Length: 101
Image (cartoon, rainbow, N blue to C red):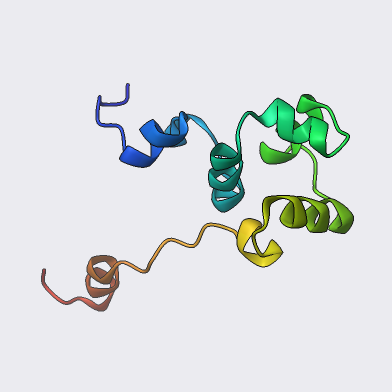
């Protein structure tokens, strides 16, 4: 069971990151700033389930979808669809190199 610590980002945008597989965290953030997903999907001429399935990674966004979403939100396409890249941990690197902590 997860602890009660919730990040400020989770509170601000209304979701729990541990309960979602965030394939596109920047896109999720931008959509949360924009408003309800069903309204954004409707603006694109799509259904809420169309958007939800792509955000969850069950379907892929086409190149045209990516361009249209980026233009509508006003953010660079590359940034919106950037994959999460956690920083390298120096402690893990030191452990593998045999350096005491």
